[in-house]
Length: 287
Length: 161
Image (cartoon, rainbow over all chains, first blue to last red; front, side):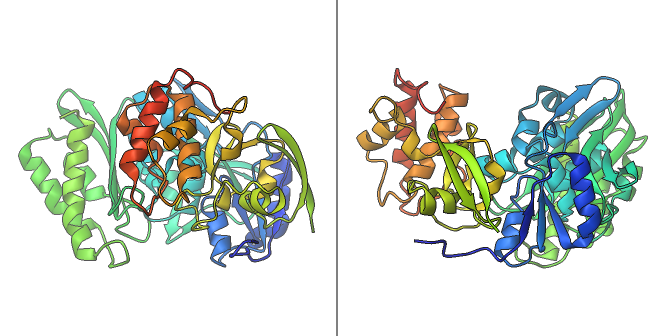
C-alpha cells in the first residue's frame, strides 16, 4: 500500500557544508525552510504549510557538538539533538534548566531527532528550550552571506513566530555563558507528551542568601516567551522569604498576556503561572 | 526528480532512487518490503513506525528518506541474531505482550535501544522508553513485564549492531 498521506511537493536540498547552505538560503530566502531534525519541518509539510524548498543540514559534518569550557561557557551546534544535550554531563551540572527542558521534550524518538537550535529557531511561544535559554541568557550565532553575527536571546524574539534571524541567515550555534547561577525549568502539560500550556524557568545569581541577579522567563502566556522584568526587580537584592514569594506570585499575572487556546485557558494560565514561578525559584535554590 | 539513496537496512546495503518528499517509512515498506515498521498516525505521534538509525530510535514517518544517506537503519526484522529472535521478541511472545500487534514492532525497537543503552533498566526506565509508543489495546503491563524479562535474559546485550 502506498502512503495514505503523500507529502505535497517540495525540493530537498542537502548542502555538504555551511557555505553551501548559506548560499542556497541566500538565493531562496523565504522560499526555503531550514531543517535540522525535521520534527517540525516535515510535519509542517505534511499539513500543507511547508515551503517549496527544504534545506536539510543532515549532511553537513561536525554540527552536532555540545562543548563546555569553564571560561567561554557552553556551545551547542545546530545538529545537536535534544537527547545529546539532555545526556551531557556539563549541561546536567551547570544548566539544569536546559537539561530539564530537553529531557522532557516530546518522546525518546523525537528527542533523538529534534535539536535545541531547531527548538530555538521555531520560535514557538511554548518552546521549552527557548524558555530555559531565555532564563539562563545566551546568544544565537547566525551565518549570513557576508559573515557571522551573534544576537542576544533577549533581542531575538520580535513577535509571534518572528525572530531577528534574516531570511538569508542560518543559525549554526547557540552559546550560553559560563555561569554560576542556580537555574531551574518546569512546565505544565495535559499529558506528558503534549506541548507546554505554561513553561517557566529562572536563573539566580546568589550572594549568600541574597539574590544578586535574577532572570525569570515564562512561555505560552504571550506571543513570544518573555522575561518577567517586574518579578526580576522584586527578586534582585532580596532574600527569598515567604513574603517575597507571595509578592512574586501576585506580580506574575500582571506581566503576562495569555490567551484561550486548544491547550488551556487564559484564566487558568494566569492562575498557575505565578505558582509555577514560585516553585522553580525554590527548586533552583534546592529548597 | 529522483535521487539515489544508498544506505544499509538490517546490515545489508540498499540503493534506491527516491524523491525528495518520500519518507524513510515509505522506502522501507513500499520499496524494500520491510513492513515491520507500521504506518500509523504519519505525524510522528504514535510510534508505530519506530526504527533505529545508527542505533538511535527515530520516527521513520517524519524522516525524509534522503536524510539517511550512508546511515545504518535497523527495523524490527533486523533484530534477530543467528536465526534466534531477539530476547525482547522472545519475551513479548512468552508474556503475551501483543494483542492486535500493530504497536509491537515500534515497542520492541524502542525497548531494544533502551537495552543497548542500559542493559539493566527498571520498570520506570522501560515505561519512559515506550512513552512515545501508543498501544490502543492498552496492553502496557505485559509489555513492561516482557521488557523486564528480556533485560534479565543472559542474551540481553544482543541486538542491533
